[in-house]
Every structure is written in C-alpha cells, then in structure tokens.
Length: 395
Image 1 (cartoon, one colour):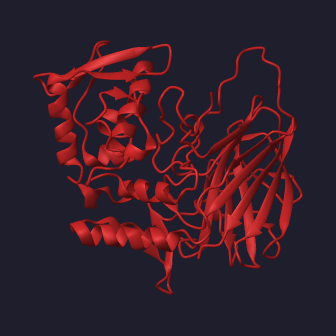
Image 2 (image 1 turned 90 degrees about the vertical axis):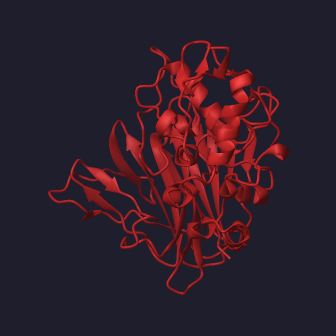
Image 3 (image 1 turned 120 degrees about the vertical axis):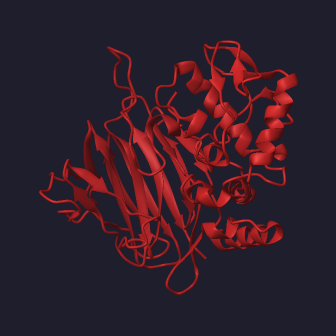
C-alpha cells in the first residue's frame, strides 16, 4: 500500500516511483480531473502542479499540457514557462486535467504568483519557507501532495513542514465513492500561533520560535519543531530516559503490522533497546524524535524489519505514549496522545483543530493500532475521477 512516506519526502524531495508488479495491467485512467476551489477570501490566487514523470520534473499547465523544464547552464535559472493556474475570484472553481506523475505537489498562493527556478540536471527549486532570502518566503502559499500511478491516486494534506493557509481534499471515484479530508478550518493559523506562544510562556521553552511572520508583523506560518531542533536540544530527554528505564525491566512489544510479525524488546546493560530479532536501537535524542529520520531512526542502510519498527517507536515518542503503553501501536487511542507535559506540542495543537483528527503533523503520523482509526490526512482511489482541493482563508 502506498503511504505518504513511501513516495514523498518532507520538503519536495521525491523518492523513486512506487514499484508495480511485473506484468500488471493499468487500472487507473490515464488522467484525473483536478478541481481547485478558491475559498480563500481573496480574488487573486494561483495554483502550480509539479512532480516527476519517469525521473523527469514536469509542471502541468492550466490547459492540461505538460511542461518539462530543460536543464539550464546555470543554477537558479527562472522557470522558462508560465505554469501558473489562475484560480479566479473567491468562490470560483477551476478544473485541470492531470496526467500520471509521482512525488507531486499542488502549490496554492494568494495575492501574487510563486517563483520557481531550475538547477542543472534539471532539478526544480521549490519555494522555501526556511530561506528568508527566497522570493517566496513572505508570500501566503501552501501545498497538498499526491502520486498518481497505474494503481491509484494517493493524495494527502501534510503539516509535516508547516501550517499556513488551510486546505481541504475531496476525492471522487468513477464508481461514485467520495472520500473527504476536511483538513484545518479556515483561519486556524492565528489560534495555533497563539497557543504556541502560550506554551512557550508557561514553560520557558522555544515553541514560539516556530512562528514565522510577514513584513506586516502578522502570522504567515507555523513550522514543525524539527526545523528548530537546536532550540529543543533536551526537551524530551526526561521522557525518553523514563522510557528507557522502564523497558530495562518491562518487555516492550511492537507489532510490525507486516510479515515480520510481533517483536519484543528490552533495554540491556549496553543501554540499547534490543529486539528479539537482533535489531537494536540507541536511545534517541529530542532531535531524532522530532525529525523521525536521524540517529537510531535513520533509514539509511536499515533492514526492512527495522524500517517497520522505526515508525512505531517514533510515533509513540512523538505522541508520548511509549511510557504508558508497552504494546505498540495496539491499544493506542487519540485521547491519550500528547498528554505528557513535554511532548510534540506542534503536533498536539494541529490535531486539536482538525475536525476528524486526520492529518500528518510528523512523518509517521499515520501509525495506528491494528483495526484502529485512520490518522493520516490521505485519500486514495484506484479509479479516480475528480480530486477537489479547497484553499481556505489564512485568517
């Protein structure tokens, strides 16, 4: 099954296209309809659709045609074609026919267009929320993600990078089935930023450092804590220590929810959390937990079974449930997430405002108990007809 983490990186770094069984017949139509609903309260808004086709970056233009940027002779060369899709006035819907592509994003912006550049390769330079000198930094933009291959259209709303103007998704299949991901309500950013400030004031921590403001001083976005990891160096250290101490004398059970079955582990005299299959995990740092992809959670060189363990450990530490629940991820319920005083408060605040609790606030936010609820902000279809993306008001 395709999930967000199998085909997309956190910052527009696309992985390889999903693998398909040999000899498999195409099941999806060659194209799907993308409907872009402008509910932003602004009359000037644009969309950009960009991703990969067989390793080549491409953009989909308003008329449905594909533009493949050539490799330029110099870095940071402006995109050689106008690929902006005008959304029209507030309340209007624009439709675009989209071909198969993977590692794709639908960018939406109000007030002005986005600037895209190309490096030799070619490699598209996406808008940055980390580089303050990027021409897009002070613009009101956001994105949704998708992959459309021979088997399905998989789309999701992600808050792994940041929260900005809210989006909603609705995916209608040719069979008539409709799956809706409501996403954050309009004007969610300011309350989230206020709560981050309150959390910082209460405990003298750095949660307010996640807030990015525009030139007018108003909130522009709130970014994930792993982008400010240096400010949270030992924030979760006490909780992680408590977990390690518990599992010196208590067995931790992890259901890989795969062919690797159920594994058990204890912390040994070498301070490693060692599983009965031989996999061992050093005690992670706060930065390792928040990023989910460094230290013992790095996927580089990891075995397949380790790749099945990592999401379940990382999710339990982000949600601060590992100490109380030795049977991960079974028995996990959302009402018990983020209850520890020191937790991933960014993820907590995002989920508090999600009407159905569905959305990625960290990379492994789709981990759930066997037979449990779907926590991911993803919609998928093997016979997609129309994906509707709704751009809501920032404030």
